[in-house]
Image (cartoon, rainbow, N blue to C red):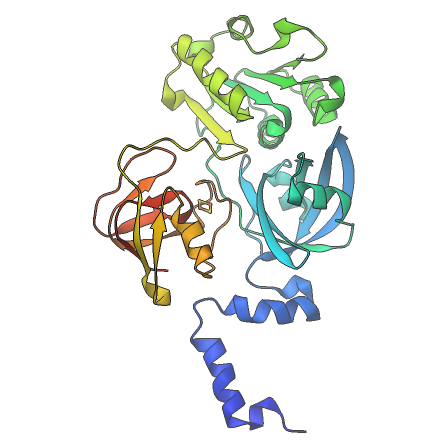
Length: 367
Ligand code: FES
């Protein structure tokens, strides 16, 4: 039989795949995923070690990434990549375990709530099995524990508590001495995520004050309000972490502002893309993807990532909401508007995020 290495045209073809590709993993990964999924290079393979119940409609997925994964800081997120009906899907989730666990036994956890109509969360709940290998990205995000010990306040809602669990276990293990207050808002007791972990932390770590408000069971006074924050000693000096659904985040920002807490004292992380702001200038224009030699017309407020995908390009991306920076690329000319802030860029060369950049006139990017 003629080996591929004895055939010149086959050698040329293989050489091209190897050396002319910006991303050799895109070529090799489908092959490696058949031979051994743990060898895939584009993402880190992670084996599902166990799946446990966490709360109503919520499961914890215990994953063991391949040893080449770089680890994470408490509060960071990863993208998980799964194939559903032949289509690759990415979603961003916060790590609910502490980095120390990864360092000790090489495992991490994602605690994921099933979303009504959510393609990926429902698939993970119904179809993902122990022993399956999924792809994960490197960790990203800046929801970091402060470097200097100071009083902290966490305002978490629903599954927004997941990165908070990672923080709290890390802080308790460090024997963090400054006061830490957690106000956790859930609908009912059955919706409490990490309840066991939270109560165990409360028992062994004197700095922690935990208050759980069950909004469907405890009446209107359980909804986040000024009185809850008034009961937090020395609130003005605290660094505040917000994590939860958009309504709760907006309310929390508003209440903290009334207590005179400055923006730089607040760290927030979102679970859904913040609502795009409206811009007065018309959007759209001719978009040139110079690296692919493709030029298309765009209209309205479609971001460059969607425009590229509509043109059958497949730029690297992750969260699609401006968090992970995996879609960052060079804009070589033209103006783009940031969908989240409404701010227009300059006309020259700079790094932009494709998923939140909307062309305002003609734009060229290095994709
Ligand atoms: S895809 Fe995550 S920032 Fe754009």
